[in-house]
Image 1 (cartoon, rainbow, N blue to C red):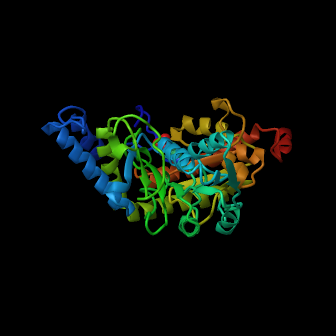
Image 2: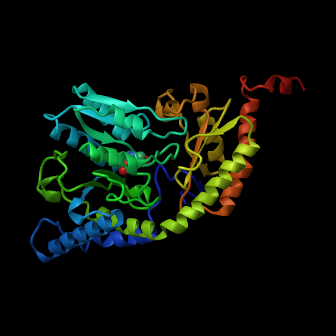
Length: 397
Ligand SMILES: *Cc1c(COP(=O)(O)O)cnc(C)c1O
């Protein structure tokens, strides 16, 4: 995949490879069909047509109307737009925002920014499995609440939130409800109508589409300020020449993902459950993070006590296995993930977490390899750890 060495890629929550069919569909829009959708000659009108047909196809996949779909540069922009756009548009009515303690940084940091601007923000706690409590959320609502933002599914621990219930509460109180569905779209069934969603973020590179393109769904009638000011694109709400090839890639990838969703969900669940059961039974002092059932089909997140997540990743890398952890010392931060702390893990346990996220290319053989490799790696790392109980004994034999 990346080099001659065969790679076992288990980091699909970070990004996914674009499907060959997606790349194929995008290519003409870089050269032959490069027209600016806002111009008036024929090749431009063709570009306009292809953008609008992508919009229709995305709308169908979400249970939305085409006029409610806005193309953006990805999940981060969609989240920023939804949060700041709704907060500022409603500032005269209120200044209170409710979100959860386990949101992605693309939601967490914009809400922190708003707090600095004088907004008040409630960070709803979650339980030990990562679930937000709709009753607690309803209790947090005040006269001043103008936005509720709770993610559909968590990118680290895979917990699927009760979005439909939360959306119903928000709707009953007349408060706009935004959900970061970047990990959910293309991976679990979802409908903005049935789930009472007013704003939804998605990103193409999380479902085998290209990087740098996403969508913000905005329900008709939702008050929101533009985020990027400039040209009249996206019905005056999101300026900037459309990412033509990216939009085609996003729509094509979403079509594929939605078509293969039932089959792929079953397949990944099977791999996921094999990994969870296999690792928990073969490695002592290990625990599953996230909800055992309300969980993304492709998410495995396990903490191994007495080891460093980064050391596990480096050892796995030597076997060509790509994975992720909730602690990243190399990124200059010694703070473990805010998500793992929010579900009650101690710093020590949070530092020893391993996230494996599955995708379409993964095979049974790859799962076998991981199950054979990880226990040995953990054993070796623990043998070097002064903290590991039994270590002393081992030293003396
Ligand atoms: C990846 C991700 C994002 C950011 O999306 P980008 O397209 O990479 O900007 C936001 N939220 C969640 C939950 C994600 O997993």
